[in-house]
Length: 215
Image (cartoon, rainbow, N blue to C red; front, side, top):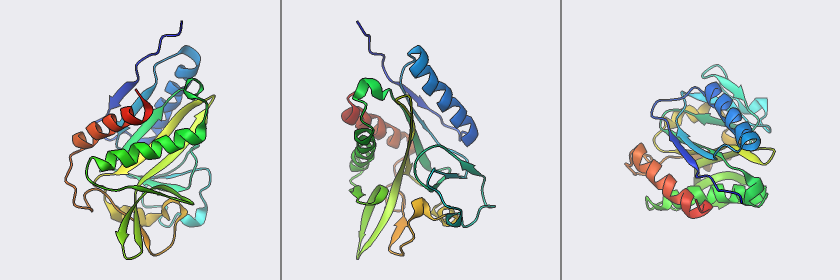
């Protein structure tokens, strides 16, 4: 008989340096696979940093000297992490969850969409564009959350980044997710008039995760 372990939720109130978070994620992912450690969702913030996914191109890094830049094994292009952005690192055992990576990515997006709905915001997917978008009207759409996934031996890590109240100007140092069109930008809950605290966001993220992933 296999006993299902409860997912561990970890909340970091102080910014966690990006390299430290990666080391910890990789160690936990290995423990989940090798020793049956509990799955984990880790909600945190990072000091300002740019990260490069496996599809990032050098020309998309516009101000490389502004913040530290780290190459990472997740999918996608360049993204920004910093204070005011809630990052959700998700470490799940997909082997016991159907071994379907496409479904997993869809569920990450659904997690963000349902979280935004708690604050009366309509987040949407867009064909050919990664992440979750907000329709601002008059043909303008702004990205409010990013996704980036890595899977090793059917254990996931990396995850999502939701813009709560980051310094949006910091996104100008990169071409976010490789999207250059003038009518596509970046937004946040605060930019849209939502004054939720990080604790409010964490509660909504936890509730929506349980709704989507069933834990």
